[in-house]
Image 1: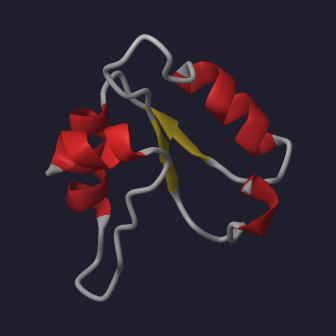
Image 2 (image 1 turned 180 degrees about the vertical axis):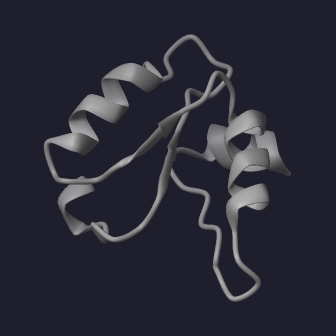
Image 3 (image 1 turned 60 degrees about the vertical axis):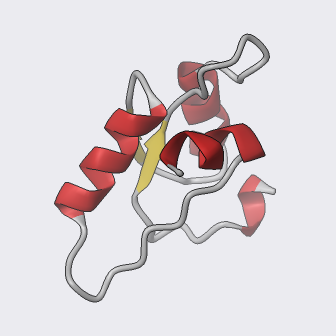
Length: 74
């Protein structure tokens, strides 16, 4: 899936609040293997907050990963 994401986007790597969630540092490393760059955050909420603060008016914030990640924002 990572190879299908755009390289020019900004990524906010985080881990959902469940035991089985992929470690955010491991996710960032896997993403960097596909030239995806971004920052690491300690929670989904912190990553979302940073995305909102950094977004321009015409930018789109996409929240992906698992249902657990999305559920933390809803």
